[in-house]
Length: 191
Image (cartoon, rainbow, N blue to C red):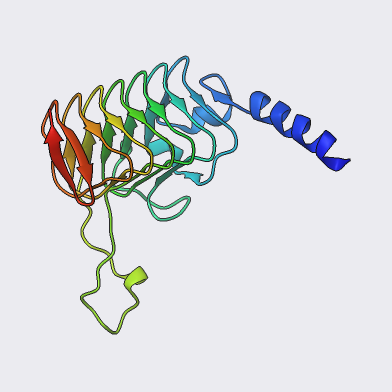
């Protein structure tokens, strides 16, 4: 059966295609720390020169790391997405930077987390919403924080250090250090 060949081949490819700091593709990044890995397969991955990854960070399979709207776009800075040391970005997560996203050291994401610093608008009824953009606002996620499965972080948000954000929460406002937050929109429920 084809499945008897396909599954072992896919598993072999997933193990062998991990991008490490010494790989040719890693050289495209602004920086790619030692002992860091980007697992295969990736989804969107472009404008790597503006992406900086610290040491000992693991980015799971099926993740997207994108800077700007399209590959090769002229960017406002060479440092628009920064992921710190010893982070774990869970499988299927997506980080879309258009201005500035900074993720501190030791931050863990569960699967399918989405972080962006840009959103759409609907002020002009004659223009499709997908073509209307609000001004970008920087996002910061403090060191040693944990974001559960399915969390969404919206533009302009600062999540403090050592925070826990519950699964499927939508973070629309700042969360102070040492907080537990949950809900849509997320609110502080403990500390």
